[in-house]
Image (cartoon, rainbow, N blue to C red; front, side):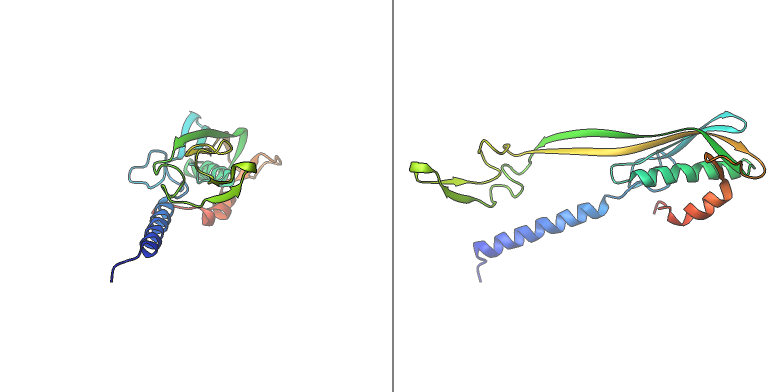
Length: 193
């Protein structure tokens, strides 16, 4: 039996959808990891710099699949982890910021006009006294761009300067008990595979 044009088109569309699902499954948010981890499937991670014996600057950078909340939670967790590793009980954030990094990407379609190559939906309409005219959303109509893809990509970077202390948590909204932070945020962390 010779495949018909319709069945070949359906098979091609199914193949494209399967490939898109495979690619999207590989795209993951930044796990809790040191920045520059080799073999990681996702970019980003944490870094720190010791300023004094009990003072650090901590950073966490997420990729475009990592939410702002995840980035801030990872930063808090890393600060708590550093605090306990250095023998302290808690930390106070003396400076804190979360910055979005927004990029706009403009690219031409690798498939020619439209997302499906030269095949795609089209419509016909009557245009005044000129008769019927073809129109489709990815072609040379003045209201649509010719096969151009514009995307805005945002990723977040959080940074904080922390001062570690021993003893009870201070009565300050910027102070944290490190063990409680680890206990509460630890189960929510996404670790590298």
